[in-house]
Image (cartoon, rainbow, N blue to C red):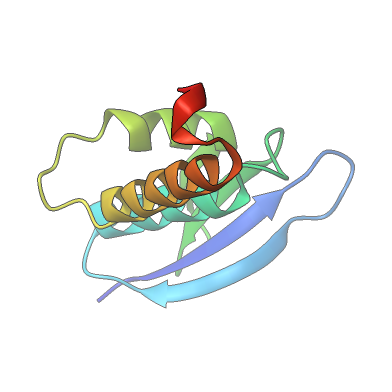
Length: 105
């Protein structure tokens, strides 16, 4: 399996290697780009994710927002990130219910 190196690029800083994974193909690498963007969505909206192969060749470069749009438009029925979003939505709904009595809705 090919190795992929995942980096975060922030303006004015050296790239930060955040992971190196042995993955079956580029689709699996892109899934990891989306997952990383999802994790960084609240703090790193202006950063980029760069993916290199084991030879150092850049195989993907995406802004956090672009990767999030890709995630949102994903229509794979087995997308492992979607349950994460549903869990977050459920947590938000539960928190809303705790803060606002039913009589206010």
